[in-house]
Image (tube, rainbow, N blue to C red; front, top):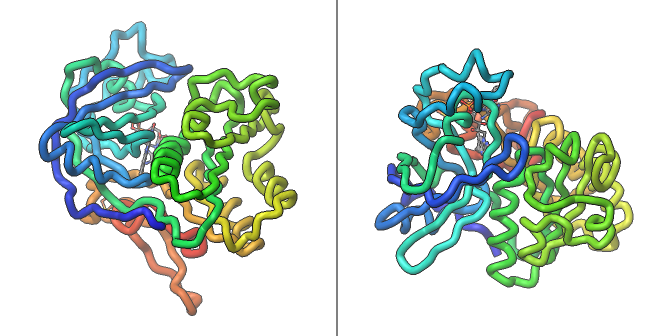
Amino acid sequence: MSEANSSSAKGKFEAQVCSNRRIGPGFHRLRLQFTQDGAIAFADFQPGQFAQFDLSNTALPSPDDVPEELRDSSGRKILLRRPFSFAEVTTEEDETFAELLYCVVGPATLRMTTLSAGDCINIIGPLGHGFQIPDGKKTVLLLGGGMGTPPLQHLAQSLTTRNDGIDVVSFAGAKTVEALPFEGRLDEISQTLGFSVPEFAKYGIESIVATDDGSAGYHGLVTNCLAEWLEKSDIAFDDMIICACGPELMLASVAQIAAEKNIDCQVSMERRMACGIGLCQSCAVECKVAGSDETIYKMCCQDGPVFDSKEVVF
Ligand SMILES: Cc1cc2nc3c(=O)[nH]c(=O)nc-3n(C[C@H](O)[C@H](O)[C@H](O)COP(=O)(O)OP(=O)(O)OC[C@H]3O[C@@H](n4cnc5c(N)ncnc54)[C@H](O)[C@@H]3O)c2cc1C
Ligand code: FES
């Protein structure tokens, strides 16, 4: 079973905002509706692919709603499109709905908070290559750090909807419980009971949470939590694959764990992306050349954003 990577139907489409909710400190969930050709193109959006959003004409919030740390940068013009993955994609009759989980970090994501039902956004996509689960894998381990969970939520949706009998376990880590981009309560009781993250529980997937400060779940780095889980697991490593998205240090660490244990691992890399279609060369990722000491640069937007962890030079 594999996730196809069809970026062939990509194009520029208008999406209409259905809702835009704040779900936590700095976290928002935006639901978009695509119709006609956009609905067809985005129905094929694969977990880990991304889309480029034009937010140049989106309004700023009122000065009182601009966080202190963004006061200086908030007025900057949004010249370039911004890349985002989706956390969930569903089709209903001839419409496609896509949900985006976003974190306010700068002028474009700040403007996104002012979008409301009925507004339209111009979006280019689907772009890039997503996660590909090779045939024969029986267990998929999802590893998300901070805001790295959206494409993994989409992968969870895709894997469980296809009902191929694959077991999925999700690991989510952040510095503190407040930095975990989930809607549900993550207290000690829900952790003990398992199934504590509604975003994964709704697909019947167990979630293991780790926080650096121990404010929820495992006390420590999510990669240490994964390594301990692997030590205790009796599943053959050959039957597993790890799919990871998050900060580069976390990806480097999971790549090392996977290499030591000979587990297949795919990592979703993040780069600043100007064009998103392989033209500007702004998103280079240094990659190893198989069978040689040489390295080459691949384009995150076109060759990725998902890469085999053995390929990337961290
Ligand atoms: C393939 C891909 C998928 C993404 N999916 C999501 C998602 O689902 N949800 C979400 O909230 N964000 C996602 N992002 C990140 C998102 O694109 C940025 O947060 C956004 O562009 C920031 O724009 P801004 O104008 O608000 O902030 P900016 O002023 O552009 O940036 C604010 C800060 O964030 C850093 N930053 C911004 N973009 C990137 C990047 N691409 N790589 C590394 N650092 C960056 C900057 O260095 C700066 O420190 C994704 C990025 C990529 C490449
Ligand atoms: S963003 Fe332009 S080449 Fe990748």
